[in-house]
Image (cartoon, rainbow, N blue to C red):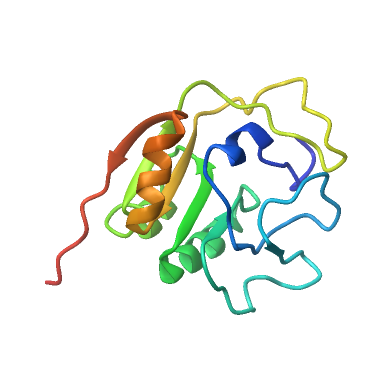
Length: 155
């Protein structure tokens, strides 16, 4: 795809409700994803996160850093590839999230100028909820199948 900046389709965001913060937002964006945005210039990983967070992290090796932070924050929804067998999924989703929504089909992401990509994501995508109110939002969205995640018990 030759870019780390791919925007979530607005029709997905509109079904999830309002977010307080997008900590990994593009510098230039055609629509807001949250009330507050941190860009690469702000280094959203190093700043304080407050409220309900929307997180569409860069896919690839850097995604695990964002997902660790999201799991620690515990209030929001993240969009990631549905690679359920990966180390990242085991570390940050299984046993830590509250639910996962497996999206119907493969969404078409948008470029930072707002134009829709002519090709779809090419892989399954999921939305990961941290916090019960975000599970409710996933369930109400109609975007796919929601699967609850069992929490790890302290050993």
